[in-house]
Length: 545
Image (cartoon, rainbow, N blue to C red; front, side, top):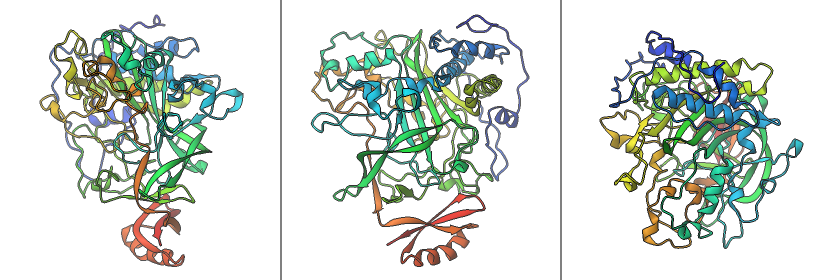
């Protein structure tokens, strides 16, 4: 057994495997109807040592299971160190403690508010644990409302709609170290402005976790092997003035399944925080890094949780806000939206370019981590063997530092590792395919938002000399609200459309014939949208008044 918190030094050199084997190791699905293209050639960053696949490292993951286990903070050095850290942090976060994953017992945005307690976040679940509350966004201050963890839309204002019509919801959780620093520097309480120590920053070991959740009605809709729980989800309504969907302030209990988890933490030598993301294996097809093409001839033949078999790649990851012509319809009675979003992960390892063997290293670490969790047959933590690492992104040591004369301007272009990192359920519409070390201006990753860019909106006002600070990397301290995601989405047709069951539909031509009849039977008109809710069993047509 390896010693706790020490990198394992036993190596086993393995031959370079083909892309197909790598995809199998990672639980990926990257084939389409086209012949698979050759992997993109990548060049190792200068000074970035390429590490061999390690055998035995996963034995140390057991140290992150106990309730008193420390969050991993050892300084990574070479490529595999970063991806192994990601798995160590994931195991720490998902270890089942008192009947729930550890991250769910951590503080949420509610705990940043004056006088708040964890128990005030929502109704209690079995055992007295606060119930997970999802997807509410409201301003505090004059409204008297408090901010809670989650959003009904993604950070760019678009909504990911699952095949059953429910929006994919989110939650944010932070450990005590992260909470203390954020709470002391909040904009709303003047802490950011009054803290004159330019070196004040998060401590090593500070961590935050961002989860995405699928609401479901029927157990048959649960992704195979996914972690499930009961949560409070927001009731939505239509703002009659703006025609936006907004939260009502009321909640209803619903069953939810975990789709994805961002794992974020500060280690020694990396104050920028290491950012990693994990997804359930069945979320969507995953395309070889740099090979995604949004054309009408490429598709995947199988069904996924968020992808209907045969959907061509020109019809995936379609935005429904920010000027998009495809606005959503919303049925207040059912709380469901249409059309649903077909999702594809455009870079299966987030464009990992730090090492020539980067994608292979992620594959090997995934295989080891999933095998470790899968071996815990008597431990409910084994459920999380059905999730895998997409990639990890970070900055070279010394870049995010006040000693760097250009520190105020660092952003995603300074990133290394998975430079195009995205989670298909959290950054669905912001993915960029094809970024390489030679065109860092095309990078799109976590540092696109989490960087020391000056705050443009402050409440209360912050002196201009105080705006550029390292602490600005955290969005839980920003501006008028404690989290920047908006809590509304514009819809095309409010409360006038609903999904009508149509039996199985076998393609667009069948829908063109069947849906007008289905809708007219309810004195409604087909809006041109349809989706399969249960393959080979049931489809629905979008019908409007």
